[in-house]
Image 1 (cartoon, rainbow, N blue to C red):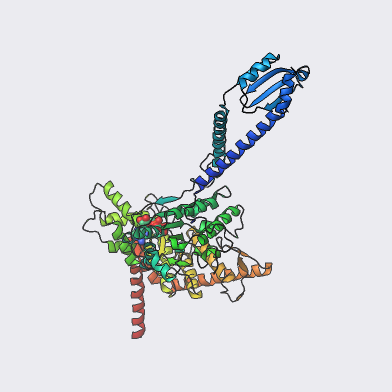
Image 2 (image 1 turned 45 degrees about the vertical axis):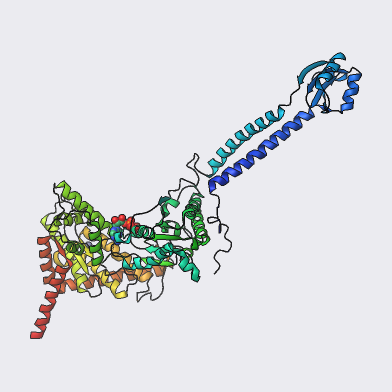
Length: 633
Ligand code: ADP
Ligand code: ZN
């Protein structure tokens, strides 16, 4: 594998004793200044000598002896004189003569002789101080030229006005030591384990290079926002006790072309100076997806990405630079980034499971004074789906609430209430629903939950509530995905569809009305059905044909139709049919389980919020009853 081919910056950043950008500029400025001064003095000399007619010493002697000289200026090394012939001419075209003076000659005697022959001696410069003057003037000129050049190059390359191109404006931010260790990262054991090797390598690169092993230059931390990717990267730096450089991909995306690329260059240059170290690039998708983008202004991102790629290829990993990058959308990254030798390791930073959440809560409550009644396990159970950042925020909100209430300790209630604020959005106390509305919302939500619960392939429900929230939802049903899913089967998607339509189905079955509350459900169901038919090849009508294309998988992956009008019409018909079928299925399911629907809805109306377990208790009890009934019969 020869990835360093054609790579101009290959030994740039790591050149031993390599000059940073600044000193380099200075030398260039100095050189240019010297050249300017030399050129100026050359021109100056040429102009000066062209003012005079060059003559020889003997020409001068004979002119003097003939009494032809009117005026003379004597200097220690030269004589400038005006002959009678020239003096007679118009002053505008007069040209004096110039000759060198042999060093053996006595200037004073010569002056006497000239005067004796009728010439006037204008000036007599006996002493040779011109060298000093010359040097002085050169130095001054040099100084001025240098200052000027420096100003110019500064303007072009960096910290000058105009916001500076590249250099120090880059929001590169370095921490000598992060002070974060793996102890501060709860859960995420797999990620920690994968990174252990990198830490070991940073501690002792020799151990690896001796065998001839090449260490990964980069690893990609993949996970939802707030799962602790930045924290883990910092912990790696902290564990290895090396400096931590960080920059966000969105910082690269600047208005001025060339800025991003020069920031990348600066980042790696700075890092090379203090290696071993960690470079962390947050939101790498902001740069990494740029190529192939359909929209304008992407040449900047493309340049930045290219620079990043060549820097990654360029740095010598034996020096101990490890590049970590974070993203929550690995699928939109440019394939070039993921090639071997670049970010070829992928470390999944998962949403925490129950144990993970509990550990995270423990980490964040280490410095918090907790009351006796606090049961962190309970909190961990209620916060299914929450990420580390949510939990950190929750604990902090709870502490603030305790202070607001004038308490010295944080209670369980504080934690539970802040859960509502942080994770579920603030409870909207002032939305007063009429009783009828409340019933509608309750049945609607239970409709979702019950259909899902009754369908085997559906995601489990974790919470149902009819407490209105600031997000605008009058109620919601929260699902717990068992794990982050990358693949879904046809059955699972059908179950999801039925669940989505379960809300409207319940409204219809129980009240015979249609409410606006189902609008979001219907939009989501339509989008899902459309994808199933036009992208996933899951319909009978169109079979394996994909009439839509995802025009740009590096972008949002939005699909658009790319087929004949007739096919598009077929797709629409198929979507409708699919939705109708799922709707009919969930309606039937609710009709068949009408008593269960009523029971749970009444329970929800009374309690406002119920958990997935409570729901399942009802469902299972019902199932058991039914089984017993069949056995008896
Ligand atoms: P990301 O970079 O994935 O968006 P961050 O690393 O910025 O997430 O996480 C934000 C905050 O959430 C962290 O500073 C930390 O307080 C908390 N946090 C996230 N994950 C964890 C975890 N596994 N253990 C402890 N704290 C966490
Ligand atoms: Zn709904």
